[in-house]
Image 1 (cartoon, helix red, strand yellow):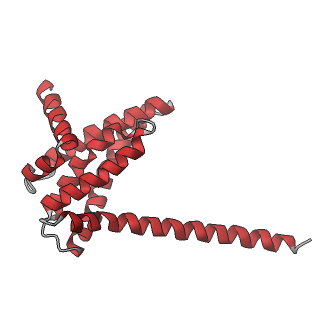
Image 2 (cartoon, one colour):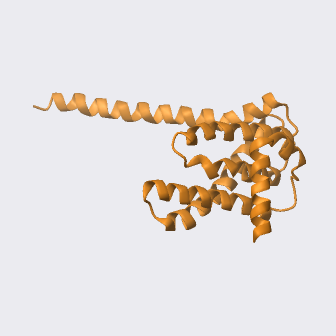
Image 3 (spheres, rainbow, N blue to C red):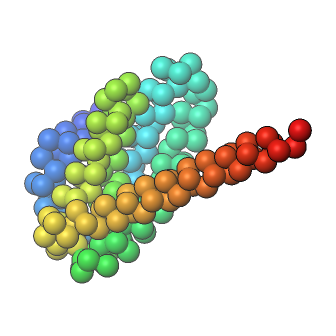
Length: 179
């Protein structure tokens, strides 16, 4: 068990401090087991951290967070893989999922107040760096691929906000005439 923890810590430090070196050396094949074990530990740490600062359920921390995290890795990996292919990437879906799994290192500290949103920016950076190596892309093309889903989500968010605002405004205006 001690060896597993030491290996996790070493991998975590390398992903966070030297992501270019890490992703350059990372195998893009070999299965999902090792990267997913790494991700599960990160989600467990994040879940426990959130439970502690919000006085929430440890059940959610230990069971729900890792399960949702792993589902998110496969779905997010698919979305990113498609985006990398759009810009000319040559990597595999497995390589993309492995990259996203290791990028989950930021999740272990994302629950810390204020630090969380800054860490989110670093997660974007990890995706860009990982994409350059996994999909043999320039940094610019990898950045475009990583920002495609972010931009789409932002546009959808703005459209949803505008739709809700219009609905509320129309309800408020019609209410004035029904006296």
